[in-house]
Length: 141
Image (tube, rainbow, N blue to C red; front, side, top):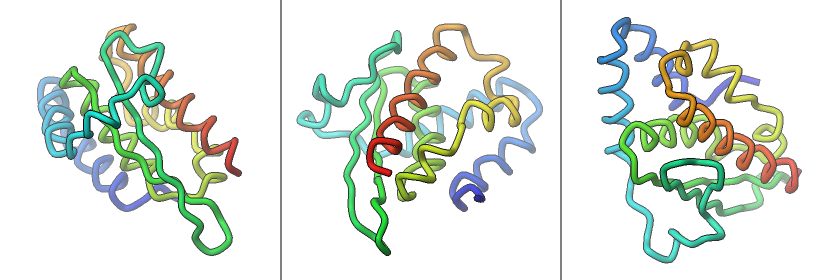
């Protein structure tokens, strides 16, 4: 199963950026482009636990071609993490629950070299976000 076009575009853009400062700037730009969540969406239910910074992921489901599709929105109070949220949304949002459950974003991030310069805290937060999204997909499979 292939990654969505929005994620493929991000991966391609990252492949052109060799310098980590440029990659961080790109992550920040991706995060800044995300729409803000409403105050209601910034609930404890939507908060991702296991992240040092505050992260909220809001999911909506819809039936499409006999499958449950999840659409995600997200936000963080930290700029780099907000960029990571943007990449995860590009990878997971709008996909069937089974595909979400089967897609290992950590392996994909490692292949792209996206985790090698993250602090341990950011990396742990990324794992917490991925685990949350994948478990929601698995529950709705």
